[in-house]
Amino acid sequence: MNQVRVAPVQPRRRFCVVLIKPSHYHDDGYVIRWWRGLVPSNSLAALHGVALDCAQRRVLGPDVDIDIDVVDETNTRVDVPKLLRRFRNCGGFGIVALVGVQTNQYPRALDIARPFRQAGIAVVIGGFHVSGCIAMLDGKAVDLDRARDLGVSIFAGEAEGRFEELLQDAAGGCIRPQYDFTKDLVDMTGQPSPFLPIEYVRRTAGTNSSFDSGRGCPFQCSFCTIINVQGRKSRSRTPDDVEQVIRENWEEGISRFFLTDDNFARNREWEPILDRLIKLREVDGIPLGLMIQVDTLCHRIPKFIEKCARAGVTRVFIGLENINPDNLKAVKKPQNKITEYRRMLLAWKAQGIFTYAGYILGLPADTAESIRRDIEIIQRELPLDIVEWVILTPLPGSEDHQSMWRQGAAMDGDLNNYDFEHVVAEHPRMSRAEWQAIYQEAWTRYYSRDHVETLLRRGAASGVSLLSLVKALVPFIHNVPVENIHPLQAGLFRRKHRSERRYGLPRESLWAFYSSHIANTIVNNWKLAGTVFWILRLKRRIERDPRHLSYTDVALTAVVDDDDEATLDLLTKTAGAKAAIDHIKKVAALTH
Ligand code: B12
Ligand code: SF4
Image 1 (cartoon, rainbow, N blue to C red):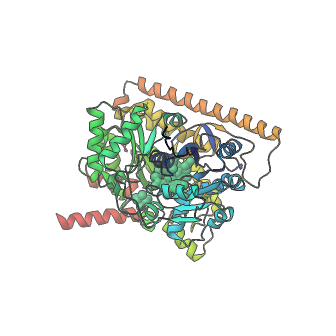
Image 2: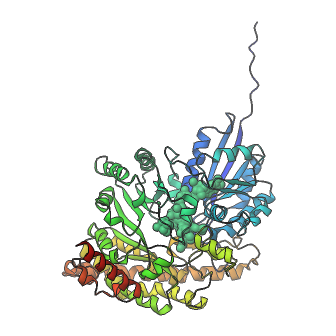
Image 3: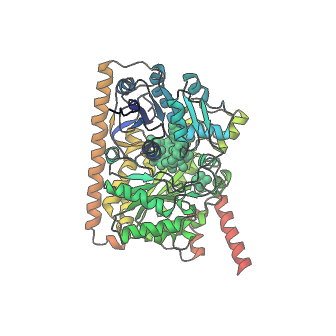
């Protein structure tokens, strides 16, 4: 009888990839974590998409399965003992990847890395902090040695097309201390879709997902890290790629997305992408709801806003930053023309789209008094819905940080504070305490009860869904005054675990920990319920007001005549504003 020779069966091996998006520490030393987060992490979705693609292509060989675990620490506890057991079960064959780590998350990321490194597991860290530092500073800058000392590999740059090399090095036991792709930006065409399965998306309120349709911004704002990490040239996914992202998510029932491009208006493919989204919405019936980010000149692009509305954009984030042109010039953002702000905001309003503005407090010409005045002007004259106040922060990776670093200027050594909520540097006209206090005050001033009523009245007069406006407003009214946490890091029901305290801080007694945690949970959520109750009653009162459609005010008044505009406080209260108006008049005289 002939014997058939069979190759010895190789036992299958499992390589564990654990993708963790770290959160950061609150002032009390505990991790900021919620029962439900507000926004899903796009960095995690991007890395998950890339890892899934590596697993499907079996980049570690035909006999190695790649198991992927995803943990977003803003809504899920990083259960270190459980994860260590997983690694033990596969003989330590795997890697922990700390994903999308921002500067303020870097200390927490290293605390997460520590027990895994102690257990001999490979750990790699990527994201804006390490990428920004390596792109803009010498390789030693801003605590990178702390990662090296722990034996954590540093991955600077984008993962697409490179993650498999990292996995292969880790599986072969020869992971390198540093990978630097900052000078070699990826072509986004045909890259794996950012994707998180529905069970992770459900951990954020509202089942939204996110993706970046493009990267890169042509401008040069000195506080910006993005241009130094993702470049100034527009790189885009194709309309086919975008359709695939939407369809993959729609199969899971997800149709609402945050397009995380920093400036969708400068994505060179914006029009074909919008045309495709319009087709998916109007012809294929996918009920798209989108939030996008744009610049303040987007309304000058023919058809841009109209097409956004047809594609399903319901919210738009605009980097307004400031209303004083001298300040805008100082941070190299002269493309923001305050003389255009009202036209631009009214153009979005005309389409029933909510506007969110990012506003920086502590630009060089600001004082506490000028900020108070500017908030009043914004409330009265700009048809804005939501303002996100942030403190000017020299983030590693930005030009501002690079110059201060080179000059040896004083900056806070605790990276956990680089979250736009803490003053970390000196200001020419305000003490640190004054600056911090006016940041806190900006929230309560802008979201005063009177102004929230005005915002709802403007919304009712413009015919937008007041319930959606209420939902958008609540975190911005509530979060900073009550939770002392920026709405962009907010969520529902703060969760804490006694073990999740910053490395080096003492573990609290059971009594001290639970008594304060339970008391805060009750008080803060009682206040939240009070705010929701109050604003819903206000909404009902406005809706029942028979005159609600005829409400108007200065902000809602259309821009008809430039001379009328020139009498607004927005355009008369600062020297820079007056100069901007004079300049417009001069150009008009010369060209007409
Ligand atoms: C969407 C977004 C958010 C969303 C979602 C967060 C998220 N990360 O997805 C929300 C609204 C929650 C948010 C909040 C905040 N954000 Co934000 N956000 C962004 C934005 C616009 C897009 C992020 C993104 O998806 N990028 C695309 C992905 C694919 O890029 P990426 O994260 O860099 O990942 C790539 C590479 O870095 C690399 N990579 C990343 N991790 C890893 C890991 C490994 C192992 C490997 C191999 C590779 C790798 O591969 C990825 C794919 O190419 C960025 C700006 C930007 N252009 O990135 C700011 C940005 C990341 N945010 C920033 C900040 C400061 C904040 C806040 C602190 C603001 C605040 N006031 O609260 C909070 C923090 C809260 C939090 N929990 O994250 C800063 C961070 C800068 C820094 N050095 O720290 C940025 C860069 C914007 C800026 N102003 O400079 N943000
Ligand atoms: S417009 Fe926004 S993304 Fe572009 S450089 Fe300025 S801050 Fe950065």
